[in-house]
Image (cartoon, rainbow, N blue to C red):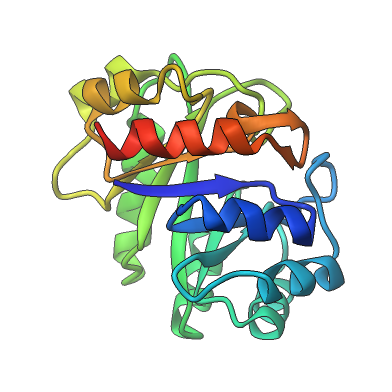
Length: 215
């Protein structure tokens, strides 16, 4: 089970989180997020990570040029598009050599929008690294702690689609149940392992990773 701990803001804490054994950590560059960090702070965090833990940049409606600038400065291989970016942005980033995780916020409307967006990406020749599914919350791009619709994903995710990363309200107490219900390729959490936004609770991080790995 692939595991990402998202929203790290402190270099020393990032080192301790990495020691807990996730596969990746998330660096949030969305200005309106309480977890947003500067490029300079991100460089300090990346410097603390072992080779086994991949840093992934999270962007919301940033221009492709800005994403590429950050990726090159940080040596990122993978970026997460978490806004309403057009398919052409993903195509440009992939052509520049980046792996793309495309985030979708899913609610009562189901997977209709996901299917349409994936078809458009495919028409441009984009091969996504993965899709991340978060809960749809009005006025928010994620990190709300609300649960994604597990039942909808379990019933409707297509095997021909990219690997599914489940996010949205995942905590140490429910991640095993989420994995059992949805069967994702990976899981992602931010608020579920925090003492405060951007401040990870290491006990919660360890418990989350252990529960996910044993599922």
